[in-house]
Length: 158
Image 1 (spheres, rainbow, N blue to C red):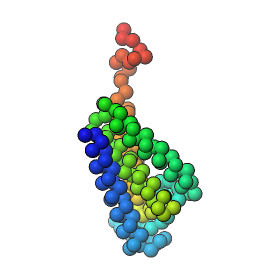
Image 2: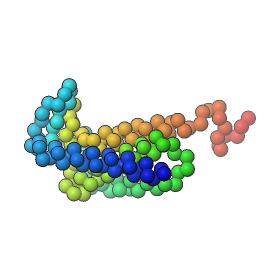
Image 3: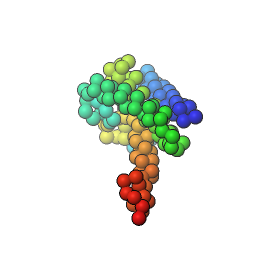
Image 4: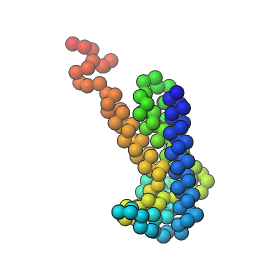
């Protein structure tokens, strides 16, 4: 069941990410920006770096690391017997977002970014999914840690 939830979340994130990027590539000229609402703009840019346009030109290295991380996530979820449903959803967000950026890098050589908070640093839905997934996984790992008063394998009771 965990693999089904993981796969469903990942596929939904991947599909939404790829559909929004395709819509931006077809409807918004590269480099142009259109005000959306509040502080948000649709700003069509190409990103060969990582989230928000940082570290431009590292696409190949990021692609290789992404493949390793995706494989590790799948193995971890498959082998884990204690993951709660929301942790599996978190890994699904990470997986879907990672696959979205990996697909772009392999197919296009760059990632299409388009959501801009008015600072010129655009991002996309895959980035949002990855950051949300990281936050949930960190929260999960912090909640899983035993308190100092609980015995752990390293500290005997007493």
